[in-house]
Length: 465
Image (cartoon, rainbow, N blue to C red; front, side, top):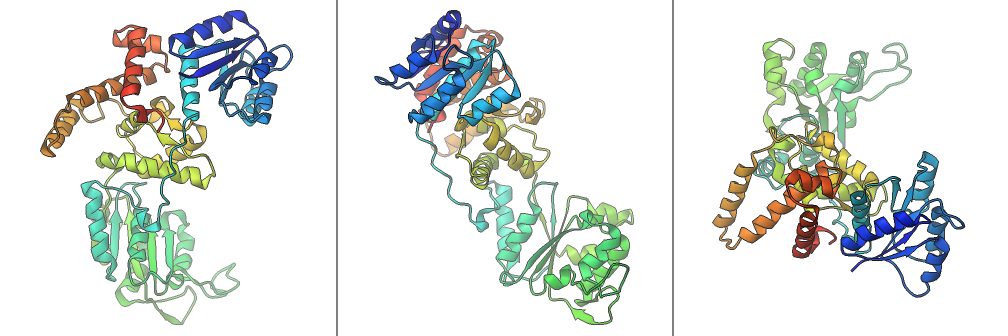
């Protein structure tokens, strides 16, 4: 049973908070000042400390410093009625686990204590290092087919057109094609044709001679020369101007080109992988894209599915991207709770894998504690029930799959998973306030608390390992 120490000079707050924590199944010791708490450390150590910031004598911020100096690892939650940026920043800078403004909701404090308790458990094992070959992640049928296609095409010199919505990972496909080809020892050069002004695009692609135009003081090799013997990745090819499409067609057809302002014919030994989120066939019909260029680029077409079309990959992707974010920013590793992963799988993801990557980077910094829970996920990235798959159909598919695999006795586990998802969603939508969530669900607060405790005992790995 967790030991929580409360330091606050307000007797009423100590009593109310202490009773709420005892009711939730914790041992509680109350202190009217920080000095008494520090003396008590000589005979015992708390699992969590909850302290007011402003107290007579030693305040909450000084208490944080004292605890750190004594090597006390217990996470500290500080509270204050005087909340400002300076005080909040000072608290976190001194190692506070969380900072709660007064007046506070009791459920909010209990939730913070639950998170703090998770800090005392062993941290999650770090994810294995992501090798370059594993940058494209997925186990869904659609991604398995992409992997098979890359394996077949990589060994050839065929040009490839990669299609798919923005953020699906088209450049990762191009890099995988290069990495697994005979061209791997040579350069991989990427160029976003939509990001370069039209008047500079020709020079960037084919290079220029000194004096070719105003400001061209010396010879400049273009991307085709830089990629000689390797792979050139042309992203957003659908935005290339028609005049430049004609020059690109000649290079693809005859494997040779001139620099801008040059007379030397240069041979081009380059494999071209192009990508677009646009419908190039429709652009051909409208006269915005050359049909003969499309035929040259579209020797092999690989289409990347949207993230919402391969939801079964989201838990694996989220875990890997979260681990990568923590490593790149030198942060303590975190993990998603099962309920949070379930919620992520129901998001709309209009920005696809890129949006998920950005979310993981944000959570690696902003989410308190080692475990990221449903309430840590931003509301604006959630998907409405109308947009999500019908949960009954999803449940039926899961049951049929388990039965096909020979599983039996699944009723109790599925019922527990249903309860966990139901309670997690209700708490998340009600700011983790148990009283309000219980009222919305039509049950008593004690019943909800009891169910949560039962689920934690049934699946301890959901909250800490």
